[in-house]
Length: 81
Image 1 (cartoon, rainbow, N blue to C red):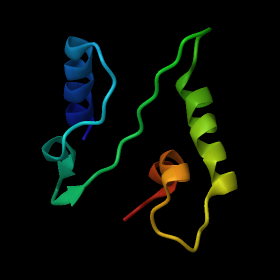
Image 2 (cartoon, rainbow, N blue to C red):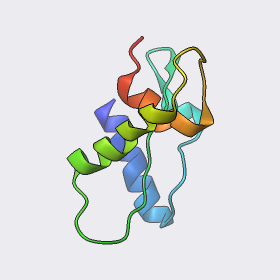
Image 3 (spheres, rainbow, N blue to C red):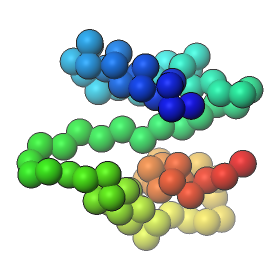
Image 4 (tube, rainbow, N blue to C red):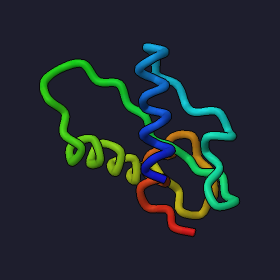
């Protein structure tokens, strides 16, 4: 999984743009994976800080609904199959 993510990050650097990977890149052991992407301009943003930003989406997450556009980063952080 780490190799797939690293390979896609390198592709993004070559393309000089931020976009989600195509579906074939996100197939892992027979499952489709989600992915969290971010673009940030400003002082240093640590992985810890970014994770907290994504986690705050839990405030608008409805735990009775499967897929929600307004909390996809949060669901990727907490989801386990």
